[in-house]
Image (tube, rainbow over all chains, first blue to last red; front, side, top):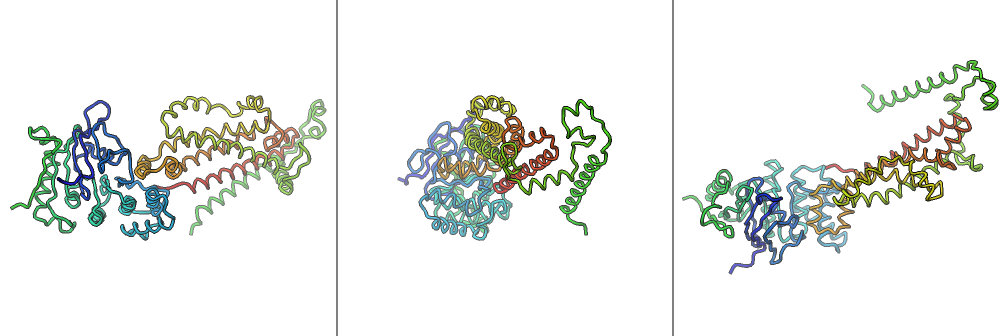
Amino acid sequence: MPPEPLVRVDGLMKRFGTGAPVFADVYFRIAEGEFVCLIGHSGCGKTTILNVLAGLDEASDGTVLFAGRELDGPSLDRAVIFQGHALLPWLDVEANVAFAVRSRWPRWSNEQVRAHVAEQLGVVGLGQAAKKKPSALSGGMRQRVGIARALAIRPRMLLMDEPFSALDALTRGTLQDEVARLCAETRQTVFMITHDVDEALLLADRIFLMTNGPDARIAEIVVNTIPGPRRRHDVHHHPAYPALRNHLLDFLIERSRGFGVGAADYDPKNPPEIRLEAAA
Amino acid sequence: MKPSLGLRAGAVSLLIFVVFIAAWYLATGAGPGAATVDPAYAKLVGAAAAGGGKSAMPGPDVVAATLAKHLADPFFDRGPNDKGIGIQLLFSIGRVFLGFGLAMLVAIPLGFVIGLSPLMQRALDPFIQVLKPISPLAWMPLALYTIKDSAASSIFVIFVCSLWPMLINTAFGVASVRREWLNVARTLECRPLRMAFRVVLPAAAPTIVTGMRISIGIAWLVIVAAEMLVGGTGIGYFVWNEWNNLSIANVVVAIVMIGLIGMALDQGLAFAQRKVSWVE
C-alpha cells in the first residue's frame, strides 16, 4: 500500500453565484516531496484551486485533506508564492523576510531572526540587497525575495501561482533553475500553476491537465518520464522530451475543450495517467 | 549657464513681494487728501477718527513696526484684554491640537472599523453624509449650552471639523489595502492586532496622513472664527478685539501670523506624509 499522500483532494467544486461551476469533480493526490504542475487555460479555476489549498478561499463542495487533516484556513505549513510578488513595499527586503520568520518563530531573538534571514537571502543570492526597498529591485529580484520569504518558514508545502509569468525570458530561466535546485535539495513538496509547457517539464514530476472552464475537470495526469535532476540546458535533449512536449501542447491547443471528459471510460476520481517514453 | 529653477522662482517671488509692498505703500500713504468728516459722526466715533482724513488703513511701514513691536515682546500678559500675540497664538494652537488630537483618537479607530467592515460602512454612511457638510460653527450654540464652557466649546468645534476628513480618509485607506498583502499576512497566520499594526496601518498610512493634513488645515481655519465668536483668548479673539479698537495694523499683523502658523502646521504634516509614504 502506498504511503498516505500529503494532499488529498476529493470532489472539489467551485461555483460563483448560481451559474455553472467553474470547476467540478476535481480529485487528486500529491505525495510528500512531489513537484506537481497544474496546466490549463485562463478561466478554468486554477488560481481558485491553489487558493483553496492555501486556505485563502473556500470551495463550494468537496474536501481537502492535508497531512490527514481537513484544511481549516491558511497555515504556516503551506507557503504561497504569489504571481505578483506581494512584498510589503514599506519594508526593505530583510524586513519582508523577517516578517515571515517572526510569524513562524515568534519566540526567536532578534539575533536568531537576523541570522536566519541573512541565510535565506544568501540562498537566493540577495545578500547584497538586504537593505533595499522592493521598489528599488528588478522584477526577478523581487520574485527572489518572494521565494526566500516562502522558503524561510520551512513550509511542508509550497504553493506557486504562475510565479515567473511576469518575468523576462532570461530571468525566468535562471529562476526556474534555482527553484528546481532548491526544491530538489530539500525534497520540497510543491504545487505550481503555470501556462508554460517547458517550465512544467523542467520542474514537475507530474502534470495535471485541466479542461477549459466553465465546468472544468482534470482531464488527465501526465507523468514526467524524464528523470531528475533535470537541468534547463539539457532537459530538452532527453529522448522523451519531444513526445511529452507535443502531448502537452496538443492538449492545450486542441483537446482542452472537454476532451475525454465525456468518454464512457472517463472517471473523474481517476483521470487517465499518461506515461510517454522516448519515441522509438 | 541658466540659474536653477528654484533660484529663478525665488527671484520672481521676491519681485512680486516688492511690487505688492510698493503698491500697498503708495495706496495708503500717497493720498492723505482732505476728506471731510461729518461733525455728528466725528462726535460719535471720537477724536481719533475725527482727526481728519488720515486713513485708518496702515501702510507697510506701520505694519512692519507693529510686527517688530509684537515680536520683541510676544508673551506679555497685562490682564484679559491685553495679552501678547504669542500668548494668543499659543491658546489657539493649543485648542487646535486638543480638538485635533481628540478627533484623531476617534477617527482613526472608527475609520479602521468602517474600512474593514462593509456592513459598518453601509450603516454609518448616511450619518457621515449628513453630518459632514454641517458648518462646524453651527454646533457652537449646542456646545455652549451642553458644555457650558467657552474654551471647551471651541475645542469641541475643532474636534467636529477635524473628524470627517480623517475618518473618511482612514476608512478609504484601510478599505483599499491590497488584497495580496492581507493574503500574505493570512498565510503567515498573523493575529488580527499584528495584521492591523504591521500590514493595514503602514499600507493605509499615506492616505490617513493626507486626511490629517486636510483636517489640520480646516481646524486652523475654524479656530479663528470660533474664537471670534466665543471671545476671551486666542488669535481669533485678538483679531476681533483689535478690530473693535480700530487698530488695523494689529489686525494685519495677526493675519500674517495666522498665515505663517497655518503654513507651519501644514508643512509639519507634509513632512509626516513623506515619512510614511512608500512606492510600489
